[in-house]
Image (cartoon, rainbow, N blue to C red; front, side):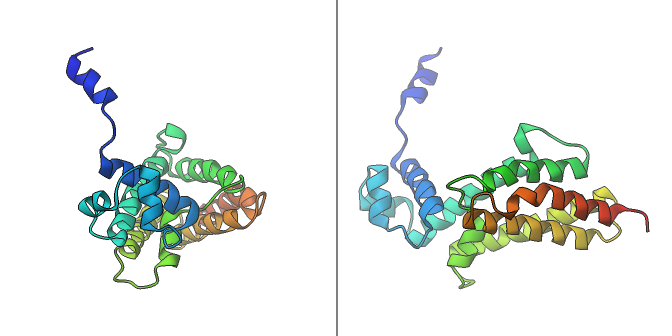
Length: 198
C-alpha cells in the first residue's frame, strides 16, 4: 500500500467532520432543537470555537446535517437494499419493504427531514428549507415512478405513496409493531388499484 494511502487511512477525522458526525447522531436521536451546541462539541471532542469556525450557527449545522441526511436518503431510496430495479413497481415496493421493518423496530425515529419540518415551522429557517426542498423532489420522483408503473392518475398515485411513506415515518415513532407493519401490503393495494385497466 502506498504511504499516502496508509496516511489517509490512519488520519483522524477533522474537527468539522467529527462535529458533523456527532450532530447527525444526536439530532436524529434527540431532535435538533433538543440538542445544544455544548452537547455536540462534547460528543465530538472539540471546542466551541472549532464548531463556529466550521458552521456559522447551530442552524447552519442543522442544515448541513439535513443535507447529509438527504444524500444518504437518496442512496437508500434509489438502491433499496443495495440493488437497482428497472421495474418502477418493484423499486417502490423494495424501498417500502426495507423501510417498514425498520419503522416497527425499537428506537426508530422516522425521517430526519420530516422531523425537521415539524421542528422548524418558520419557512426561512435553513433546516426547514433543506427539508422542504427534499420533500418536493421526493414527491416529484414518486410521481415519475407512478407514471412508469402505468398508473391512470400518476400524480394521485405518487401522492398516495408519499402519504403512505410519511405515515410510516410518523407511526413508526409512536409504537413498535404499529401500523407500519402493514405498509407493504397497503402499497401493493394502492399500486394495483391505480394501474388496473378501467
